[in-house]
Every structure is written in C-alpha cells, then in structure tokens.
Amino acid sequence: MPPFLSKEQKIKLEPIRLCASCYTDAPYRRLEWQFKAIAGCHRHQVRLLHKCPSCERPFSIPELINEEKCKCGMYFWRLSRHQKRF
Ligand SMILES: [Zn+2]
Ligand SMILES: [Zn+2]
View 1 (cartoon, rainbow, N blue to C red):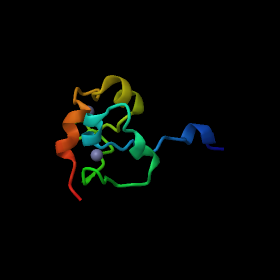
View 2: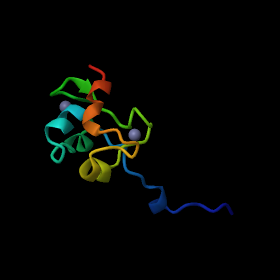
View 3: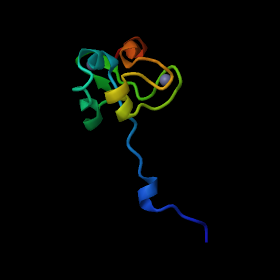
C-alpha cells in the first residue's frame, strides 16, 4: 500500500492574489481580491499578481500583512509596475 497523504495535508490555500496598486493605497484593507473570483483589479484596470516577479515565490498572507515585502526583499508596493493592463 502506498503511503497516501491525509486529506488535511493536501489542502492548500489558493494562490494569494494581489493588486500592488491597491496595496499601496491601503495595505491592511486590500485582501478583498482573495475572496472574489476575479482575474484583475477593476479599480486600476490591471491583472492581479499571484507570485513575486522577482523570486517567483507565491505570496503569503502573513508577509502581506506583517512584512510588507517578500522574503527576497521586494516591497509589495513596488510590484504595481509588473501588473499588466487589461
Ligand atoms: Zn487595484
Ligand atoms: Zn520575492
């Protein structure tokens, strides 16, 4: 019998989605993208990011809330220039 993982161990959070422009406006109030099935920010007319363009790591909620920058040192507010327009 192969060692199956339990269901709990397989559960992962959806990729964190981020509009860096909204984040710049209000870092603590802009996790709203996470709860909507949207591909982009309609306020800024740009697509959302789901990983750091510098080191390719997926975003994490604690980093977004507490660190305001990626482990690689990239500040999230600087990522707006990596967002593609609709
Ligand atoms: Zn936005
Ligand atoms: Zn990074």
